[in-house]
Length: 390
Ligand SMILES: Cc1ncc(COP(=O)(O)O)c(C=O)c1O
Image (cartoon, rainbow, N blue to C red; front, side, top):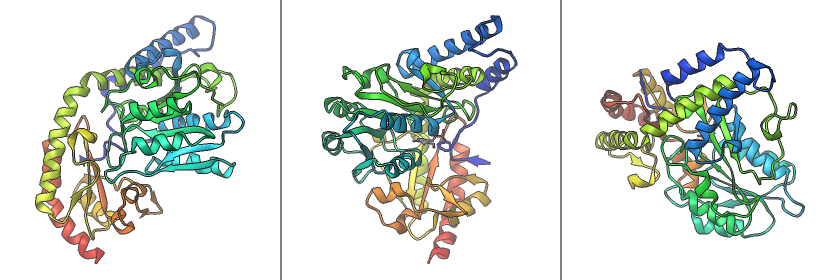
C-alpha cells in the first residue's frame, strides 16, 4: 500500500508504542498518594515536562487531552463560556477545521455572534483582516490555524497572536496540522500579552506525529479564564477532570521529542519529495493545478493539494485506492458522498472545484516508491474520473 494521507493520521512510532506498552503495564493512578500512585505521577509529570519543552511552554500549562478535537473544544468553548459580561463574539477565520467550525456553530446556537475573517487566494489568514476583526469590540475569543490542514498554507501565527494581544482578546491557535512540521513556541507567540488575553491556548494531537490516537494536549496559559468541559476529580488545574492517561502521556512525550529532533531534516526531505510529486502530477495531468501557497516556504513540507478539473474527488480516490494508493479529498465524507471542501471554496473557488480536489500528504515513512506509484497511475485515473464527471 502507498499511504499518502499522513495528515489524516500517521504511523505509530515504534519507540512510542514500546513506551506506551511499558508504562501501560505498570499499575497506579497518578492521583493516588501511595507509592504506586506516586510512581505513576512521576512518569506523568516527566512526560508533561518533555511535551512542554517541545511546545515551549511551562509544564503546568500542558493540559493532556484525548486529541485535537477535544483540545479545540476545550479552548473555544471554554474561553467563550468563561467570557466577561459584554463579550459574546467569536472571531472565526474561514477554512478552519470542523472541530472549530462546528464548536462555534454550537456556541452560535447558544447566542455567540460570529465575526468571520476571509482568507486570501492561497488560503492564508490576512493579518490585517484578523486585526480588524479582533479590534471590533465585544470579542470573547479569537481562533486561528497555525497551518491549514487541507491546503497546507502556513499562517503568521506570531502576527495573529500579536493582533489579539494588542486588542486584549483571548486567542486560541489550532496547531494540530503544524505539530512536527513547524517550530511552535507558545512562549514567544504569547509574548508580553496582558493576563488572560493574547495567545492563551494552543491545541495539538499526538496521532499526527506518531503517538497513539487518543493522546493530545491543550496548552493553557496560567492567566486564562477557561470553563472546563468535564467535571469531576479536578485533575489538571480543574480544566480536565478524569484519571490521567499516564501511558498515553509517556508515548506522546517520546513521539513529540523524536518529531522535533527530526523536524529540520524531515522538512527538507519531504519538501523535495512533495516537489517531485507535484511536478510529476502536473506533467501527466496538465489540467491539474496546485492549490494553496505555491511558495514552498509558505506551505507544509509534506502537503500537495491538487485540483483535478472535471474529476469528482470520490471517483479519483476510488480509482487511486484500487491501485493501492491512499489519499484524501481533505474534507469529511458523509454517507459516502464527499462534501465540497469549505477550504477550497474559501480560496474563492467554485463548488465544482471544491468537489474535484485531492490532498496528498507525506510523512516519516513516505519515500520515492510512494511517489512513483502515484505517478504511474494518476494520468489514467484522471482520464477515467474526468470522463465519469462529464
Ligand atoms: C487542524 C486540525 N485541527 C483539529 C483536528 C482534530 O484532531 P483529532 O483528529 O486529533 O481530533 C485535526 C485533525 O485532522 C486537524 O487537522
